[in-house]
Length: 351
Image: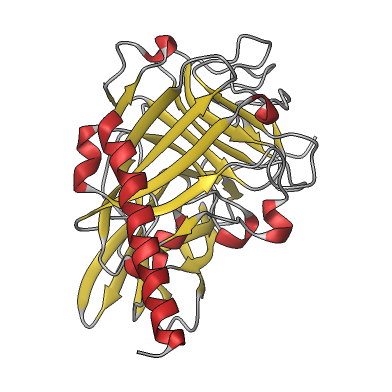
């Protein structure tokens, strides 16, 4: 065996040993994690510029994740000098399709998630999280940019005046948010902020920040921890529906102007996350309470030959509130359905 081969074998053994050690610690805290595979381990730095420099993971095992996955889990452990180690484990249905998108949502990952999530499992030794286990009331706020206090997504119980579990991504700047909350109790499960640009210190916490902003925004406290490790894991299984397209337009609550004949048209555009042959769309009428009501419009072609990683087309319908439903086709089979709701056709006023 050559010296190069010996060195390569030693590196592979070391990588496997390191990954096994990392997983053992997570499984000790949360036995459920034994069914998961490690994707990333990050030794969180005091400060970072992940958007410009990328995320320097201590372990990046994305190349080994060659199967679809149905759930993703996050394990964060923190410790201050002279204090006990605090940890939290959160697993949820996968919100992305590829392993490379499960880590810190820096700009290179192309991930912006502002979603309410059900079927979430939580385990932790933090007193703020005592009694939280199986949750259907979780809010995820992952993006690489600045954000505002306005509760633009209408997350239940969130404030428009402080940073909490219902904020608004600004679309510019590089502050960065990686937060998971239980909105029913107003509890931050974990938060890692201020990592996108060259800030003095990142924000980091488990449970609620005792200060003004419960999600740890502006705390700049990462250097106060001697241990700060984030692990990301996935569980093999069928990927959840609705992930094949990333719809950029229309956005939820968007209203387009109706035209003569009491009809209007939505521009439908976004990115394609998995191979497909055609995309069709229709509008499902919604009652005032947001439930489907009435006959949907007929499916019509949005993009009958999507090329590359983007799609563009339109869907027309009568005035009213709707759920936009996109059917994704491959080899003559509908492989996914992606929805955007609510969207409206009516009067648009500028004041």
